[in-house]
Image (cartoon, rainbow over all chains, first blue to last red; front, side):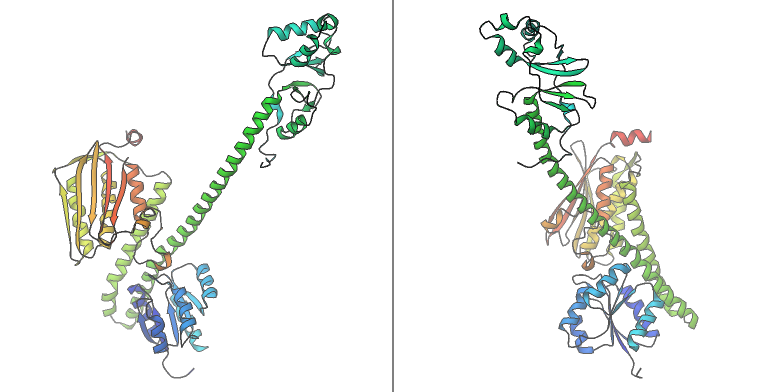
Length: 124
Length: 398
């Protein structure tokens, strides 16, 4: 792993989840950017080129899984690792991962899992 | 013509029209007398020791006897002499459609002859009228088509219910988990802050933690209420209370919900106090559900609660100047979790259960709920309640 600080973008419409997740990851030593709407996410990803994107699934107007396929298909940073981070049940997340081309998922509330999965993806 | 399934066709034993018998030894003249005496008698089975040996039909017997000297020639003979000695005979369990097929393949002069029915032992059970079989067959065909249609409709409905149920479960799961996960995240951060000896994050996070818990409780209450209503376990109590006072109280709660949005809330009520007999807790919940919806969707303007007598009951209304509801969306408004956007992309917080519960509660109180809305202009929810509770509920509480 390089010494460069890793950059994570979190997209979630719920401010509580957004702030909590941000703080947890910042305490892990990552640089975290947050975005509270699915709109313009692709643009932000292309411009800021994060090392990882955490996507909430249930969001107004554009769901995280569709957003994921948008990033994958329209982006100049299309290969960025993307994790779904959602309160949906694991089966539906697993299905979304393969269907929309995400790198994996973490269940909201599983904070140890979040730390582990993020570290794993960034180390790869 | 659509074939009928074995399932649709009844066994012929259920269609026996008569069991008129005569001994094969009976004189032809006596049999003729019987036919003369009973105009509706169409056929007699010749039966000896319980077993059929032939069939005498009115038309054939008369055809013989009315010939010149017929009665003179045959009158004293036993009926077996001129009866059909090999009538069509079927088992009692045979199917209507197959029996009718066979009957119709008979010769022209035999085609309307009655058919004998015997049991497994070959003992006589009765006669079948071919005309009746034809009518029954027609009924079965018509019914089977109707039934098939009904079964298909039912299957489609069941599929819809199953789909809605799994959607419901997915929603419940998400709605319950989301606030719990917020609580877990917040408490984790507070724990870490405490570990560092830093108190400031606690001050920031505690209000969020408690509001998440309150939100979670509201969702759980909603889900439990709905399942209680659907299981028919929701009790209704009858009491007399001041409805205008209750509306005032709901009005205050709504103001708190609105926070600093520029929305005025008022109550319009001609009578104060307004004495009313119903279940006060449920009436309050109905009003709170409607006003909190109004508060959620109204950014500016007014939310008005009105109360008036109407016919043999009262009319309660919550009128807002919010975003309104599209006409196409109105009809699924009261369906559990039929949130107007797809679940994954919905805009507003909430369980999607509020209006379902509201409508069920209004129903428990013997009333009805209606919605009028102009998209972009505002929405009116109108609740009509009777002056007294439905009889059944009252009796249950006495």
